[in-house]
Length: 201
Ligand code: SAH
Image 1: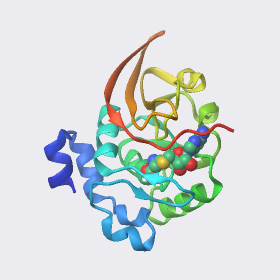
Image 2: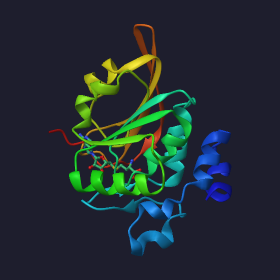
Image 3: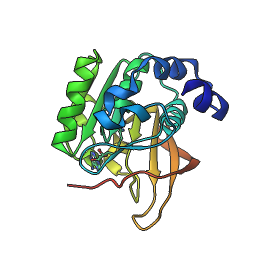
């Protein structure tokens, strides 16, 4: 996966490559899909949701420039794989999931594999998670029409946030990265992605 999909496609961050070459992705999939764990495709998880393709996980993570002391927030735990990758690169990860069954399963997987700096909570991520704010990194793993205001409020000075932005009727979304410099927020487009929608409530 690292040699054939990540290295030839612009993943250069050594820490991201190291994390993704050692985390067993099959552990985040159900039995019959495990054989596809290292193929470059999104795969089904429970509740009609998907685990993103490895290249998208790698590029999103790299764009956030995670540092060892960073506190990260993820919206959309899904299988827990992306949270596992962040947990190797940051000091603490809070990940929010609105489907209780997914949150419970991901939490079990992460604990079993020893990712003990990850906190999984059942919540609507569009409201943020004030308890551990501010965050150096915010990764939104579901598509939203707009950047939720609560997440902007919880971004630390110098913090980075990635989010797929697009409307429900579009097939693809624009993956954007935002950075907070003192009071200002700058943003740029990274690439087109296809994520499941963020659902509020
Ligand atoms: N990062 C995951 C994949 C995310 S799929 C992984 O590595 O496997 C997107 C997830 O976002 C789904 O599990 C979906 O239930 C969740 N989701 C959608 N809207 C949400 C919201 N408002 N708050 C939290 N999670 C949400």
